[in-house]
Length: 103
Image (cartoon, rainbow, N blue to C red; front, side):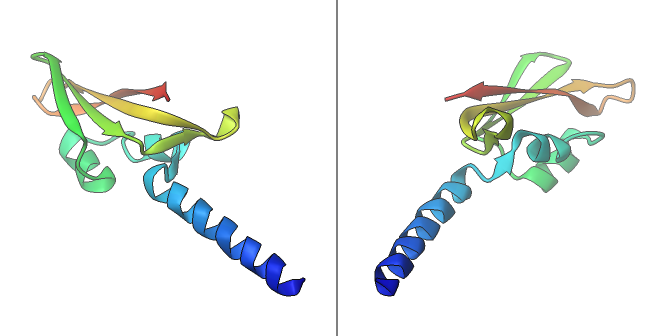
């Protein structure tokens, strides 16, 4: 009986650890990696994005895939997190906001 319980606990722990690898950040923890940072500093902190979009000359959007989950909504996973940076007066791209796209 004890062996069965221990085996079930190990299987559950392994399954959960696999989830954390891809969706390892709450939305708020991931957002904190960008607040008050330039684009370059944010990439150093959060890692390389899946892609960088440039919808206009003054905007860059860092797109991260499968990095976050919504803790306030039953830990629902996000397919994408899009982090927007706007060019400031000095010409640097600084954090402007983040959008999450649920799976």
